[in-house]
Length: 127
Image (cartoon, rainbow, N blue to C red; front, side, top):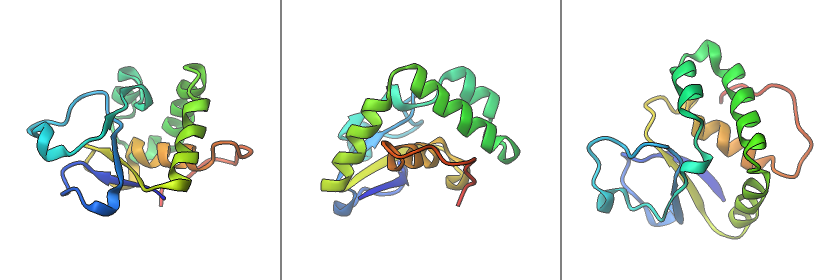
């Protein structure tokens, strides 16, 4: 099972493997308290894209599209498919620091991973 969770929420056994998917370490959080199994900076959006997006809801669809393009250009499709297979066998939680879960890059990444190996769909909207 694949899910997302703010890193500031306490870790739980049902999280399974916890993958931090931010480029920067979350402010004020000790590594022990974060209980991160892997820090996957390579899956985070670029600094430029993150700055452009600025968590503005009206930019969500364009951000999602650009983020997906960045991952493709970086050759990360195989990584996404590997994570999808891994999540089919065990719990995997993508942890992130953004305040708004409805418009976080982790939500987009969760959807990219869930759709790895499937045909591309139309524009995504947050849940």
